[in-house]
Image 1 (tube, one colour):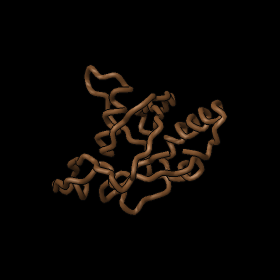
Image 2: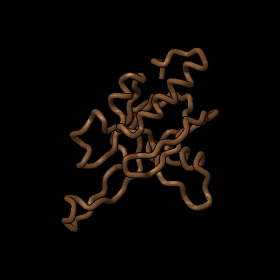
Image 3: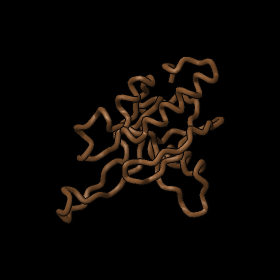
Image 4: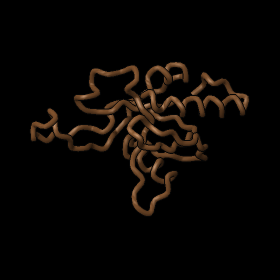
Length: 142
């Protein structure tokens, strides 16, 4: 499973429980699947080709709802190119800093992905494992 690590000073020393699926906001007039594909491309620079498989939705501790899809692929994490965002850092300092939205990507088997992903997103790993089990594929194969 390909996960991304958030960029910026808040996340730079965090690992276990910090990684995420590429995700973002749905824009006006955009459906959730199209938004997911667009956000994947913006956060990673990787093109998406092929069938998407729905993984469902999960409410996050922040109360946001994430809707996710899986797709087979073969992206090279070393080729990651992320868009950037501007944040105030340090908080309440008034200073603006531009950071990459994502600073790295990595392929993990599902066991390691469960350890690395943000707790509110574990649901998607379980959903992916269920898809593999239904298809007779090993859940440890990304």
